[in-house]
Length: 222
Image 1 (tube, rainbow, N blue to C red):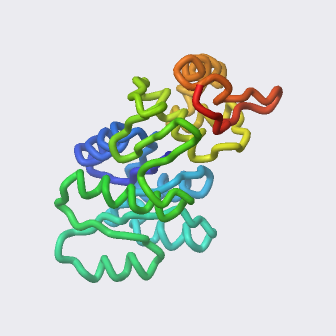
Image 2: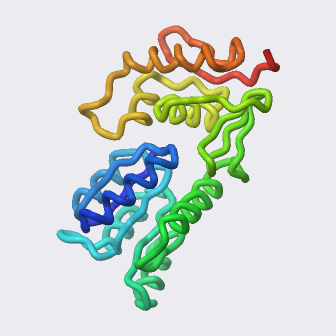
């Protein structure tokens, strides 16, 4: 999943990015409202963690502009503890959930998982494709009940393929999911990761669609 973190306090932003990335997501970040509004309008994110107290443009205005532009990604707003007016204003502006500062990172991750489950077709934290099981909460994969050891990039790649199983995903789309920064993106490396995944998954799980990309097929157990 691609998550946007918008927070102007450097230490908290780094902690959020680190925790969300460790949970298996691709994370992009912004430290002011103008940058956040731009990213939210030109990039596709599965969810956003949005602080309301931002420089240049406050988070509430950013959220309102996203919703006016028909950007409907789930948004979890961060508010000052006890400031119920911000909470109400945020929900009225189109937020999906809120969390008061200070907070436990485990709670933020749990709320983020809930938003992601609500958005997609996956009603639980466990996804299945044939003999492949992926647990988004524990960031682990099983094949025929046996644990599969994956690198972080391999896990992110498999997560997107399972989320959109049966769909053809281009190398560029897969690359954007794995690498949050444009400078890091190289669609050629996707072939390497796909090759590694193929060796670990049942035969025939990942199909190459010539000239278009790859798709995950829910095969029988090998």
